[in-house]
Image 1: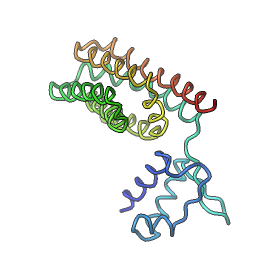
Image 2: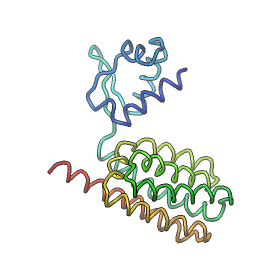
Image 3: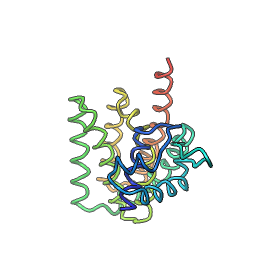
Length: 211
């Protein structure tokens, strides 16, 4: 119960349902989630430790969320770790995992052509999660999955940018080709560059929203 409540509130913050400055009360959250105030209180305490909320004495608990600098820092760290992940996947991926990775890339191209953005967002996540599994490093996969969760909203903005959408699929295909060829050096280089390109695209999206 505690884990479910924590995960739901964290997802709502990362997805943008709760924005920076929003107050989160135990009673309102408990009612919305159909639970007592105790698991909500524990979830808010854990979220405070992660820096996603701030408890201000005599005022309440407020969303701090993820700043733009946080997002860029996370992507910078991810670029290094995803490169390592792709290198390991090129060496360790199983035929079954490769087939699933190929399917995710194919479906992403299809839904991009149809402009089915929700499906593309899901398939983008699936491609990366499958690559994390394929590296067969439990610690690395867990770390990358956590970083992936933390930038959900930013990733959605990036993927829904039409020019980036097509380019991202092309980059996934190149990474897939390198993994299929068991070329660890190439896979690492491409995966690292893929994440760095996301940072540049996020900056471009931000400039467009400001105009």
